[in-house]
Length: 100
Image (tube, helix red, strand yellow):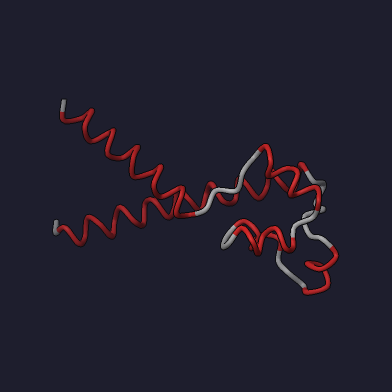
């Protein structure tokens, strides 16, 4: 297998795990906030609450309800960039462990 193929396979695996994490975060927040995830501005603009879990923190905070912002204080949003760094670190640790 080529280096490029391995990299694409790893990226796809990471992305799939992130997607699972993202959906879990969303569902937990929805339950914790009783579905009150958007502020008035977000509702007026027709924002999809799921999109608050992706993208910039500034956008998320601009449209998130007080309940959701409070929820994020104890359960921080995890961006793909942060997830990817954590995933890569775990993967490298596993490779080192396997090599030992």
